Image (cartoon, rainbow, N blue to C red; front, side, top):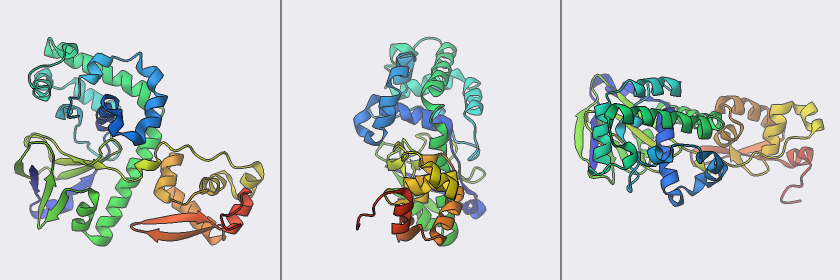
Length: 324
C-alpha cells in the first residue's frame, strides 16, 4: 500500500528533520516482543534484562501487536531535533484518553489485553507511568549514545539534501520511499492507503534506531511525518576500544588518543561519534588533525568516508599493522 504526501508550493523547503525520544521508546518495545527481528539490539536487550523485571510488563507489551504496530499517539511528530522526552510525556499525559482507547482497540482488533482495559483515563495514566519507568530504567543510561547516532544521521541527510538535492536524499532514506515531482511516495506493508497535502504542516523526517524500514501514521488525520532507519545502527552497541595508554594521552590529548585507539578497525566518523556519544562535527575536527599528522588515512566508501590507522598510527597505539 502507498501513502502519498503532496508537497505544494514552498513546502518542499519545509521538509525538516527531528528526533523523537518517545518514538524511540515506543518502537523499542517491538524488540522486546520479537527480539529475533532485531539482532543488532541483542547486546542492549541482554543488558537491560534484569531491570525489566520491575517494570509494568503487562502494559508495555500490550502497546504492540503481533504485526509490531504501535499506537500513533505514542509515536508523535517531534517539534525539533532537540525535543525532550519530558515534554513529550507531559503532552501524552494531557491527551484525550478516548483517543488512546480507540487506537488500542484498533491495534488489537477490538480484543484489547486485560492490562489496558477499563476507564480510558485510568489506562492513559497507567501507560504514561509505565513508559516513564521504562525510560528511566532502560533508556536514561543509553540515551546520549542513541541521540548522538540520530543527530549524526540528521546531519548527514541535511548535507545530502544541500549537495545532491531532495530527490536523492529521499531515495537514500530507505527502500520504498521516493520523491516524484513534488509528491513523496511511501510504500508500506500495512493495508493503509491515503493521499494528503502537507500544506501548512510541512513534512517531518524522523530517524530511528528501532525502525528497520519506513513507517508512517496509519491515519491521514495525523501530521505528515516519516520514521526511517538511521545509519550506523550496526555500530551502536559495540564496545569502545580499551582506554588509550597514559603516554598516548599525554602526547595527543585524551579525545584524539581514544579515537586513534578506536580505529583498530576502519570506521566512519558517524560510527565513531555513536560509540563515543559525541557529535560527528566534533569527531571530524579531531580526525582531520590525526590525518594531517600522518596517523590516519581516509577513503570514500559509497556515501561515507572511512578512516583507518597508518603504520605510524599503529605503532603509537602499540599494535602491528595487518601487513606487519
